[in-house]
Figure 1 (spheres, one colour):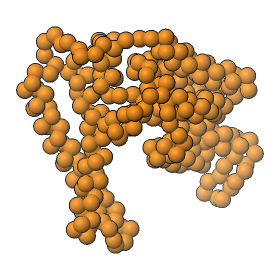
Figure 2 (cartoon, helix red, strand yellow):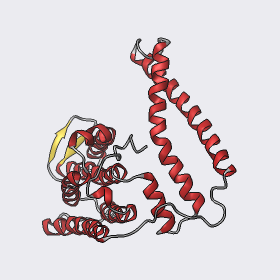
Figure 3 (cartoon, rainbow, N blue to C red):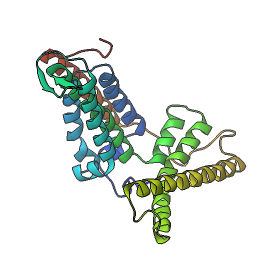
Length: 264
């Protein structure tokens, strides 16, 4: 998993922060974005988040490689919202079955930007956070049950293995001539078959891991820790950064006169 997320060798500023501090910062940003629907607050938060990429040792090329499904999904969601939303203001496009007005376009733009602004901090968090450090922080600082923490750690470790398993299954199927040629429908059918194979492997691996962890006594009795999870001044700055981004997004939207709660 560490290799999959490029954490090994990453000595960026955010990588050295405590995982719980990064979680708090992400929560503050996500909370504000979840409570509003205007495009100004979302764009303000998104610009601030993009400025944090150098602090995580990332590039925009890596952002596209890891977040392109989310970017495409946000664009589709924004376009769909602009089409189905009620018209308000001047009509910009009318093709009979659906139309886009100034109000619906603004709502769709806000939906798209908000989806990106909520997803981006999660990508930053997972990219610059080691799963073991996260598990240590959850158990030592958040006082979560050991079974839950160890299960979460195992799941995060398996994400990287599942990516490798997908590539292995794909190469094995291509060696048998499955999925490498044919019509789009045949390719889609081959992809679904490969997905089912990955699901079977995931269930088998999870079952073996659960039995192994239970046999070795994970989750029972008082545990000791190989390394202690600690807080530092950097963690305070990380939380303050999340607070500044969330507050800045609200104040910018209020100043622009576009701030609107989601239930309005």
